[in-house]
Length: 285
Ligand code: HEM
Figure 1 (tube, rainbow, N blue to C red):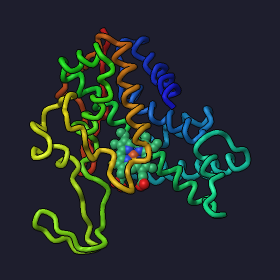
Figure 2 (tube, helix red, strand yellow; figure 1 turned 180 degrees about the vertical axis):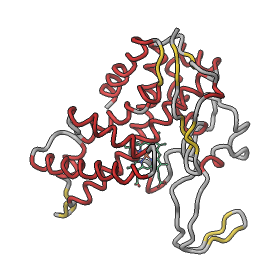
Figure 3 (cartoon, rainbow, N blue to C red; figure 1 turned 90 degrees about the vertical axis):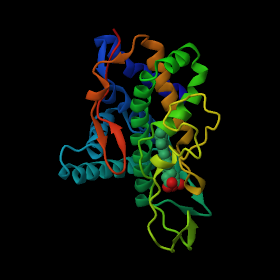
Figure 4 (cartoon, helix red, strand yellow; figure 1 turned 90 degrees about the horizontal axis):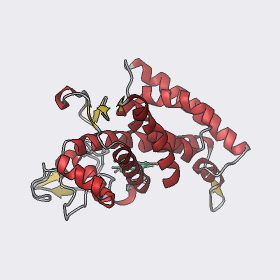
């Protein structure tokens, strides 16, 4: 999917050519992963506009009442998409899931819609946030930004460090131990809810020397940003590719890229669960 993601990133980036100024959250970081997921799931071009607007409302509603309505629209859209791909398969992931068999067993309509919904949710939000916060982090570290501009082969290392340093999720998905476990002198009984604080793990001084420092040259590049074990992120390779391509496209095309407002004026969507930019106004003048 590299070539397609590159083309989409290039197309979205023209907004800055045109105006010399743009909100990269609305115009670039948010649409790119949605368009890539659209390709992955085989969403027809004509449906992408309304579909993207329903997904954006679901993630960032203006008032809470909008969420149920947006989820309902997406659900109905995915039901229609499953029916269309059943009637006429394409070379997309949804058609492959429809065709998949496991010892004669096949995925039912509800399972297919639920999987498509999961891929849509998991595949868009975090990638969107990491592209925008990733760019902000690089802009805030001019020496490392200059290094990456001079040698784009450093970008994969920069992406790994961004996954640790700028991860939007404060908390991992809830866990429920199936048997008692002892961690840090505390016994957790089976069935208890366990909330793991990713933000804390990623800034653990016992693990990462000088953890609050952004450093693309870290030797230890391990992190929990894409999970661990059975539920390791299905889209890990795609996420890394998209973030790299997004940053590479912007840095290559816009040599004078800079924040258009003081960093302190940027607005964040901050909650117990996640931390993400609402907007990222930039200039290339
Ligand atoms: C920077 C972007 C991304 C981040 C930070 C991220 C992070 C994660 C994490 C932490 C998990 C593990 C959840 C758990 O422990 O239960 C996960 C699972 C998952 N991710 Fe991602 N993800 C990203 C992008 C993507 C993309 C692009 C896709 C799909 C195209 C995707 C699809 C999934 C799916 C389907 C799962 C569930 C896997 C399972 O439960 O077996 N993710 N992701």
